[in-house]
Length: 115
Image (cartoon, rainbow, N blue to C red; front, top):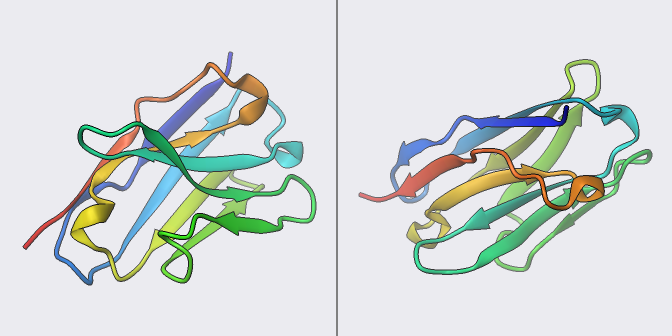
């Protein structure tokens, strides 16, 4: 069955960096478009970034463009989100997502940006 397991979250100071990982299984990762979403405290889950299935074209929300980088390692079936220059407003639970399985969400990984 589909499995998405996020990791790499933690507590970081403003201006710091983190790299999130998402181990994927249960579907053909090599041909899957993948996304990162986040849910900030007391807010709805929101889209952060996506990467295309074949060519790997990337897309970012305005709030993270220029600071976050999405990438994937098809040999490892792993999706990444490199986050630089983190801000307190980036505090959230981060989720990876395969839109083909729209109702499936992993447990997420918590990111706290605070001094």
